[in-house]
Length: 325
Ligand code: GZL
Image 1 (cartoon, rainbow, N blue to C red):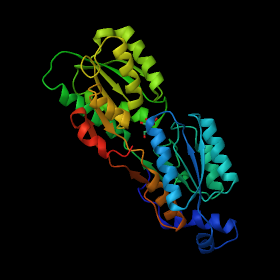
Image 2: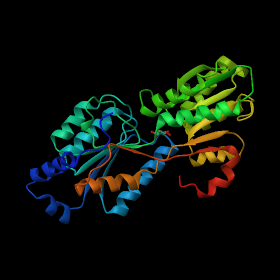
Image 3: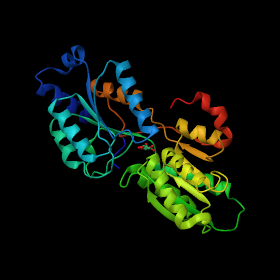
Image 4: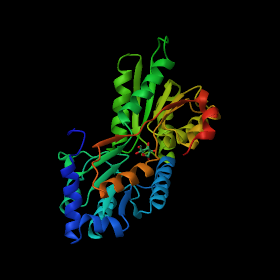
């Protein structure tokens, strides 16, 4: 990864050129024009995404920023169309949560040519030239996977038999799916008792999570000891499948999940989910601050990491009242 901070010249040149192309000095634009932010959202596939959208819209309103918001229904081509529309509208700043890591170079080069700074939120992109975006703010998905793995190692300490794991992966090619898998495997590979016997995408949705878990249960039945789901929505779908198969979720099959949404706390309080690793969707205020800092010509760090925790079912009831998403 390139050096961690953009130099001032870099940021100013992007902003300055954008302003000069409008024929106004930076100050005049900053003083009398509302900042216009174009945001391309992935979709509404999960509770996490809904909370993320709410956070962004509320923060834009609170900051007096004009938000042009587009929902891509989880399709990359719709995100690319939205980014091109923001460029054509000459917005001040573009931000988006990329549905998958690859395929962004061309449109990001178009934004750079138009002198419009781009902020990545939530998920990263895989580009050779990381000057194509100003900053990436979001969780450390590798660490989230490691936290899930460490919890399982702790939970099974002292047991000698095989621990057969089925895994519900997130959207194929997405940064969270790639890194949550990698981080989890990094931890469990230390002990050969852990065996991932099935791993398939549930695309981060409840419906698909249930459908794939039904197939896992049909193929592996009572051999399954653990479900590792890359998000709570797929875990909640899988819990339905486990109950319909006459098994007790969180007892017959230990369930580990990620996000920490309300539905996960409800499942933990009901004794149906063992643990959820926090992944905060509340990026709205940070995003608006970053956009305003850019407009004011400030330098942004290349990477802004969200601080997060882990919630085992034993603390769910106590923590639930203070949860914000
Ligand atoms: C993670 C985010 C993921 C969530 C899912 O930051 O990209 O996408 O874990 C959501 O719930 O669909």
